[in-house]
Every structure is written in C-alpha cells, then in structure tokens.
Image 1 (cartoon, one colour):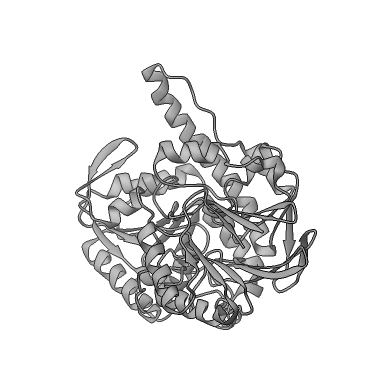
Image 2 (cartoon, helix red, strand yellow):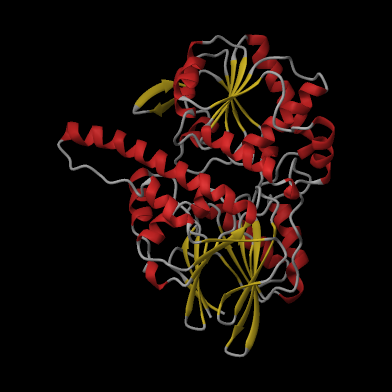
Length: 463
C-alpha cells in the first residue's frame, strides 16, 4: 500500500492524498489550492494524476481547499463514488456552485486585463453546470457507520468537530491479507467550540495522516472569545465606525452570529445593526438549521429556549448586489460580516476597499489567513494593501481574535494524537505551512513515534 501526497504538503490548501491499495486508487479530498494566482491557476487546472484512474474519493469536509476541485476531477473523467457525511453533502452542493460563480467572475476580471494587453483569454476552472455534474457522484453517510469503498477497503466517518459535517476518516484495509487501519484527521476541531460537538477521539490506528495548521501555535482561551468580541464591538461603536468581519461562509459566520446573539441577550453589546452580506453564508446557515444532530448539547438547549441561534432583531441577511452596495452609503456604527474568510474573493473585497482607509473602522480577523492572501497582509498590518489592483492605505484598526479558530492548536493536536498513539507505526504531517508542520513533527517524535514524516508534494510513502 502506498500514499502519494499531492496537495496540502508543506502547505495549507489544496488537500489531495492518493491511496494506492489492492490495485485501486482512493483519493482523500480534492481541494483547491489558494494563494499566488499564477501557481494556483496552474495547479488547479492540471491535476497530477489521471482522473479516470481514481476509483473513489472520501471527503473530510466541505471547505473549498478540501472539496473545491471535484468538478475538475469529474470533468477529467472520474466516475466513482464521492463519499462524505450527510451534512457535508448538503454543504458541498452550495460550495461548488459558489466556487464556480466566483471563478467565473475572477476570469472576467482577468480577461479584461488580458484584452487591454493583447493577451489571449483564459477559461474558468469549471462552470456552474460542471460543478453541478460533480454533485451526481456524492454518496452521503451517517457518522459511525462502516461502508464499502473498494474491494478490501471499508471506511468509517467520525465527527471531527471542525465544521458542520466534518469527519475524521478511518479506513479498514485488507492489503493482500494484512489488516491495516489508516486514519486521516481532515481538519481537526477543538473542544468547547460553540455550536458543534467536540472532535471524537480515535484509537487503534496503525498509520495517521494529520493536519498541522497550528502545529507550533497555541490558541487563546476559547472562554475569552465573548469578552474580546464585546470589547471590539464597543470600541468600534464608540468611534462611530464599521466593524468589518471577513469570515468563511461555512462555520465561522455562524459562530460569529451565534456569539453576537448571546452577547445581545446578555446586554453586553449595544443594539447596532448586523449585516451578513454573503449569499453563500445565507445558504449555509439554512443548512445548519437542517442539521441539529451535529450541534452540541449547549446549542441544542439554546435552540429550545431561543428558537433560532442564527437570528435576532437587528440581524439582516443580504442576498442581492444592490443591498450589498447600499452598505457603502450607510454611516456606522454597524457590523458587516462577509466572505471570503481570507479576503481573496467575494463581497468582502468591496467592503474592505471602501472602509480600510477610515481609522474609525475596525477589520476583525477571526479566521486563519494563509500565506500570500489579502487577509494575511491585513493581519500583518501592512501599510498599504492591494485590492482590485489598486493600493489602499490600511488606516482602519486591525484586531485578531484567534480563539475563534476551528483548528486544533499544537497542544490539542498532540493530545489527540497521544490518545491514538499505542499502535501507531507512522504519522504523516500535512496541511500546514512548512514551519508549522516540521515543529509538530518534532513534538510527535518526542512522544515516541519515530517514523514521523512531513512529506513534500509528490512524495510517496510505502506502508
């Protein structure tokens, strides 16, 4: 049995790990690479394997860096099953359509520049029709139920506690008479996050592929989130400014809304309007309402008491473009939550363009920001940031609340891996910037798992 690491290897995005067993090829995730435009364009358009050769896909969750290149896989000839949880299937259906829409808009912008320069036009990665075609191959499963993947390979999906429907994949493999259990964390969540259940502890693994997004970092105490958010709201309110929150449409937006709701009930923030300006976030919130089976006990109690965790007086969901544009004409104070979370596309770019030069405003970073993204440059406090090809002075206040992160930090990852440790023969560390992955690998080795590898892209490991 062999594993080839084709994406999220010494990088955070583009998750793709290829399992070769019993003459079959099983792909764990098929995500989009994000970052440098030219490199991302090349990688996303040209898969490093023949799509027709892939027998099955198992998705860890619905973030686009894990599922966003499924349409390219299907367009290239893949005709197998794409396995995932029930909630992930629902989210993927909106994520892929949105990804196609954003990509087409990006291509229109690039082609305008190409025409001015006399360059040939570029084609979108995939169309909405091609995204919808990929949905035909989704096969949804409940948590904790074994299912057949290929001959000699079964899989079980356990709750990863990262986003709605996220899963830790456990593969039970009969490799020419040898029984092997391989685990893949996907993106591992944290204990005590709002809304979702805690990640499930998994034991009896022979091999593990683990994420390392925060492999050498510690999060702030999750119990301080409400205090920090309330303080940020009051500071911006007192200046008469706008609080701009770039947030992933799935999970982070719902967590922020839920936290604001709780603060409003407790009278800890002023009654100011809150605008969720993201059609994808609106659709995702509706899917959250359909899957209370994924909620933790506290959220289910809140649901019974308050009816809707994601709705309160003064909260406005904005779907059409004209509503979005109207926010630029309004004076603060107000809160605007918009996607994308890394500020690489979507309506958040317009809100940043119109608000980053005003010192009364605040940009609140509540999500991980990958290298070479606009969100990362804002988080680093650059003097100027480039938006839609123009430079803007970053005069707005920048605040970072790291405790909102849905990724396990170093100690949380080490604790989780420690529970799986007794039978582990090897660990492969992926989905992290190189510094983070290497640091986590060193700590895992100190726990006594000496075969710990941080693979390069294209590297193959034989089990």
